[in-house]
Length: 270
Ligand SMILES: [Zn+2]
Image (cartoon, rainbow, N blue to C red; front, top):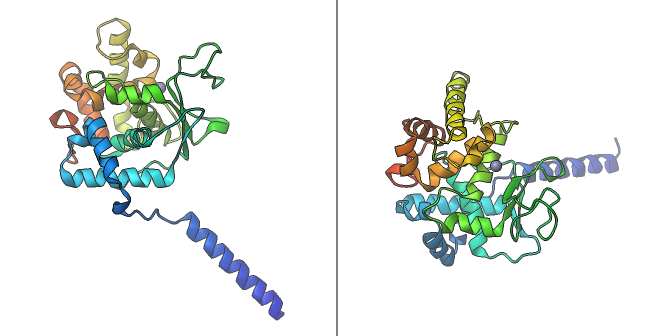
């Protein structure tokens, strides 16, 4: 083999190593990158963060930095600020907080629209502009869209159980096993799936019969039910526990958190 050929092979091997290192690189997170003004925003806007003990706040901040390092957040025809970015990241961090070190791998970008939109992604005019958020499929795979107005409202309305950011990230969590079906297979063992579906279907029936305090949108299907009750679990845990104790217990096991005891409180032993 000629010297030129050997050099070419060596160069190719070096390029391959370089590409592999880039693919498998873990994000390098420096906690000092978390700005003081971000901390103030979280304390003012995210009740969940406010209730964490100091060392858990540091872990939350680290998770936010990991999220920022992996996911782009882009305003589409609308200005977004640090608060919007932090609310998006918080919506991703909260559902996974019982699983230290975990982060979403099935998303690359969150697009922020000004307000409601329709299936043609129109935010002005157009018909049926009633969507507040969605997890993309097909060409929009690895993308999420959130209405800026709805995202902010989810954290403003402290007496409401609705939070579109958490709702959409729970869909993404549900989708992680390949199917958005309301069955979180990342945590439920196969023998636990039917009991979970029995609870879900019983609760959906109660919504249909007007005997439930759960947002009626949860009766759309099992996937919407899972997202809707997860919003309830993180935004008004005490009410959910009081009104739907069995469902609360299941969600506590799924998320490894007991937010009714103080938001963000972890319960690894359940
Ligand atoms: Zn939904």
